[in-house]
Amino acid sequence: MRAKGIAYDTGFVRHGEISVPKFDLDAVRRDLTVIRDDLHCTAVHLVGGDPERLERAAEIAAGLGLEVWFSPYPLELTPDGILALFTDCAVRAERVRSRGAEVVFVTGVELSVMNPGFLPGDDVLGRVGQLLGQPERMREAGERLREFLASAVSAVRQHFGGPVTYACIPFENPDWDLFDIKAFELIRSAEVADVYAESIRNVVAQGKPVAITGFGTAAWRGSGAVAPRSMEIVEHDSSGRAVRVLPGHVRDETEQATYLREVLETFEETGVDAAFVYLFALASHPHRPDDPSRDLDMAGPGIVKVLDDGTWEPKEAFAAVAEVYARI
Image (cartoon, rainbow, N blue to C red; front, side, top):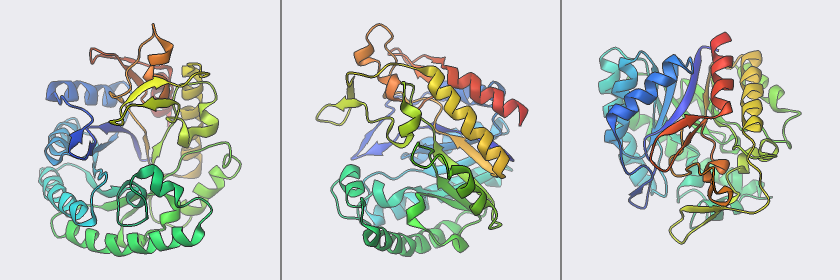
């Protein structure tokens, strides 16, 4: 595997609110240094909705010698809003690249379900619900997305001279001729476990470099079997914030660690060019060891557990990722 990576959250923006209120550049530098030195990563997938934060984090990562995947992550934006975000970020990504850094521009992630304009529905759950058992609707969403991506990639390439990709859900079926790298949000679950490796071999065999992004699972017993839905064990308040773990779930860090070790080994065996574990830390889901009903980290895919005071501690998954990346 050429690029051994992890996603790093700079703050997701939805309806004007950002998921990481405080963005401390010293803390970012410490985290990215750990990612390089302790996790043995060679690349980092910087995700978020604030262009300034993405650029500052990219500068730090590049200074540490990491390959930067510069990834604006639109949430609930119109197509025009997405295009404006991408154009701004393309200018910023090129500034980082022009100083000698290796930079890949990610022209969005799962755009068709994360934003209006491609599928019916007022939010992510509503749009995903429109897809179930509806192959024609999937096809139509893919057509709308391909039309949008043609414009988006053209706008990005006017400002950015490095490689460009898009992190897709497989049904979106983007026009890969537009891109330098094929990137897939490909999460193993029990339903697809028997064909998971073969499906990856098939896309790798098509010739263009393949990256797997967005994969991971939470830290509760049984999460690996339902990994794409492993965060869905919490209740949310009216503002959408996670507040409580639903009854009947047991914390199990070993499950998460085993899952990540197995899928990373699969990527190495199948010839994947780049892999990005999702993710380093999820501050919105703090670890509360004394109150399992409020231990939101149980539902979080982070490989470190963030405490209420903002500090973090490694989970078993941290050691698993570090061990695999150190030897492949």
